[in-house]
Length: 161
Image 1 (cartoon, rainbow, N blue to C red):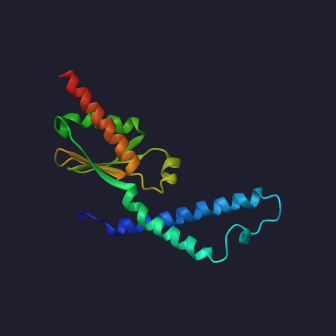
Image 2: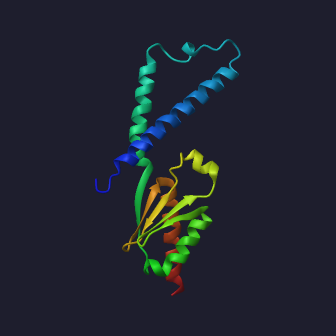
């Protein structure tokens, strides 16, 4: 795996473990509050399933960062410099702001604090424009959505020529 960032991977694993634990305890809390009779934790699970649940949470936390984050290549008809303003506009319409810029990349972050919290502050999208195709890197859903928007905008450019 070229470019694998182990420190970032471990950080994401720990964040997902914490996130899954919080969701689990919220669900248990809802059961406790909505139960008509006396609530007993033992009634929800078979004896001995605690270890299985911990293993399940750990495995999901270890696997999800591999599938939840991607790199996507987007081919441009022109160079990045020609399409830069259109790409920036797509990010603005998707509620992202530019937080970092180097000579070969741009980094965007979501503007909504609630969205950022729900995504565990792993909402950055990096655009590497060293070559054509440009490469978008970040959470799968947002990267694919923005990549499709860029491809659509580029397609519309071809019709104008």
